[in-house]
Image (tube, rainbow, N blue to C red; front, side, top):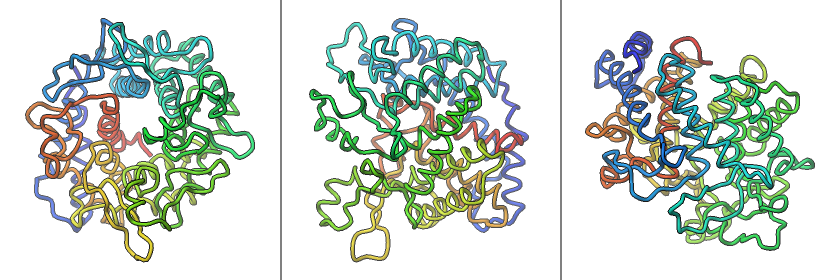
Length: 457
């Protein structure tokens, strides 16, 4: 398994620097203990998921896992979960190439994704693949959101296996998305794709069902698909050095940065085809709360996008450009001001600026695992980029204290779906399901390691 001493030196230095540099916030745990905890958690997390989730019966990865890591009797093969399982194992295998378990898990995920999830008739990856015992009737549409994760995973896998047939899969996926979903007139990509036509033009397209599921109207463009396309293209350009890939990466960076981010520093969620934001700000409070899935401030997406913008700009320009850094910093600062507990121990899920008020109201105080993970590693990045602004150091330390106390299962391992300070029922909830794998928490821990190996931004 992974050598435990890989992280100890760098993470010791990380937290030593955080304290020596004069952070203003309290540190309740000695920095040596914090370093050991982070090192242990990275090892524990990877070892909990791999090779357990490798499904040698059906291919791909097991999806549903109980709180104690028992494989659930009901299973589903959904594109996003499968792609994230591949990305995480491939990314970890890139960083720890001696770990054969991670490499074999990545090989396994690649084979399932390309052999069983690709639509050989219409192209693109299916949102779901039926298991032999399935009685569920899965929808026939595809999502660029899921295909973006497939592109992200395939590109990451190509970094550890640069064989031509792997790179060809990266190219095939990008070309299908370009041909099927890109808007050549107004830019960006549509998310919802029917089996027989581009986006929402098919007469048998069940738009109401998809809207009810929280994906907006089929004619809309959206922030969530767009930021993950940005994320995917940032890795794609590293293995498929094509001029059009670079052009699309630049296009998505500018769209996210200049169109999707409000002047205040938070993201709009949905847009008309011409990029006019969907806003309920003039509606009643009850209407806003009933329809909050379509319009709210998502603190987790805001702080995650700050990192994705910086990373994309670095890939395009060698180092992040000034405008991108300014917007990304604004997004982090806005989240710190409005989305955190006063002591930075825990970040809220959602907020809203109601009409006639001058401050953002938190409308969901839950701490969701993926958002806490993305916030933590982004704050560490910011503390490295802005050493003189100690708020990032303080917030990063206190976030780790929160995560280690309320987000990590100290008995069974892994991360709870929600912080157990507010949601104690998460202690018995599933560790894995179709929207929860080890991608966000895994990436967070891996990024912290890389930053302080001198291999990050």
